[in-house]
Figure (tube, rainbow, N blue to C red):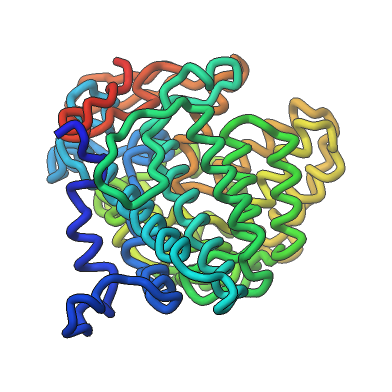
Length: 449
């Protein structure tokens, strides 16, 4: 059994659900994907490649809370335990399995292409190859944010990363790479993707060149490599720097932002929202109060609930079924702003921050930020980052990164049924436990507790 890879449990599902053309072939010999068109159809599978990402990190983060009655009403025991940073085993496999299913499908595409002649259609060949590399990088990064420890350059070559799957073959065992190897693979796949992706807007659900640059910028930010984060954020914004003016977004709408809106560089979401959904979650009061009175995000992102607290409604996925974890230009402006301030490029940081906020405040009410002290400006940028990227799957990664500096450490607190739960900065639960069945089947080491 230990020779089964981490995604053996879903291999059959992949083969039956991800390729419509399989159901249309009466000849079983024709059911084996082997052409550029087959590869293209596999990459068109929005459900498998764009909506499968884990919520555990955001569930464990501090932008919201659930009350005792709501916590008791949750049907998923794993989500209840993750909310409290529990040491109990994770029983369900979906949040680990589904992103690896996306990796499996990307690897299927790469295997098809490996058996074809590039010269049959070299442009499409390279484009499909690049898209598959992008999806593999994005999925592995989503997994790393949740199931791997914080990235520390001094220990990354010793810390445990994740299993790296580079083939759809089912006959070789999984092992955990180092954290350095995991992040190196993510960056390498994104860099491979850049060369063949479109400069123009791609078909819905597919990545562009700007998205690949943005994915690298996000990854380097999580690694606290601010020089490279700036470089790749800048490259992304050179290709696409559009921001929505929130004055043009109707405040009264239950879902103000459409899926595939013009700020979205790459659309991705979680399968379900769980405790993050509007029925259960209530936004942290201090976070809500941190928005200025003319900051339009207050009414576009939040709605008042019957209990007097606020719930989140501003998903860029345009639905309540999951949370948006894709990449937007607004996030990349904030990456470039933070990286600029951290590398002593104050004017660039101010320019990016002010440009973003002008598009978020009521017309004529925003006064430009002029702070020139790097430390104070950095705090402003980080506060705006949290306010802009709320419920975007980024807060858990930010806590893991920022806690490594004493001035940004934060102890998280939950209260359920008159009992207090705490999560200390840099503690082991910042790497969510890998599902027990994966440990049992593969023999890979569990995250430390």
